Image (cartoon, rainbow, N blue to C red; front, side, top):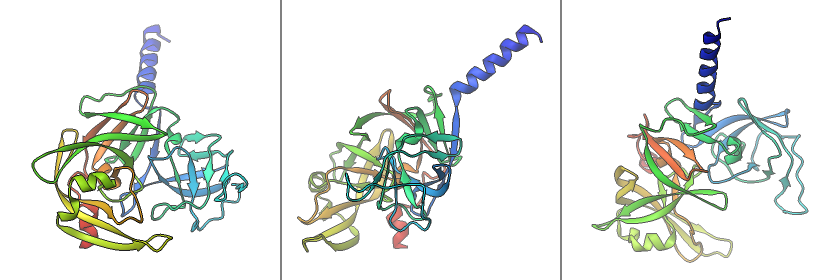
Length: 289
């Protein structure tokens, strides 16, 4: 075979390896949660929700299938933990992954899986093509906007800005793909923004284990900005009452699913690009209709 042709084939293979190694198809449920099909310990099939705010995996208490290959130990944690498992999602296999028991998950799922699915690689959440793409290095990001990304205790945070008046306030937001809403504010920020005084579109009254009332509120925030992208009249969540303290701001699935994301944890940046869902109805507007 001609040596120049061999060099050409080698170049193609190297470029292909750098641009994308593995892909994982996914689907969105009606609550904007990401679902993938998994095989656990080469035996049990499960539909798992991808939870970007966790590292390991879990199974839900209301799962329909038994998952007999997963052996839980309750001596260390009463809720149950299984420490040595293999989970295969499409062509990606994750070894020695922990699985927690009895954790709630998204609609249509029997459990959750977190960032270990990507094995410390750069990954893309491509909502236009309904798939994840794993990369050995950073792919072409020329069409994307850049966001600083912070890793804290295994969770990912980006900065965003909010305004209920003339002044914009910038804060850190935990990427939380299990929360269906667009944004949820921690207590202090909701007070600073005076969210209680904004138009309310939903209110739920709950009680904690001590019988204290907690009000789950949804108000309409005039302005929210993520990177270069501005959103107006955004339904946002917050809590009122002493029975519960929300300690982190959330950037939820409603906001996440409007962009294609390239996540480079080691490099410390996320890259976002508008996708086909950008103008979708807001989750809490959709619920109201």
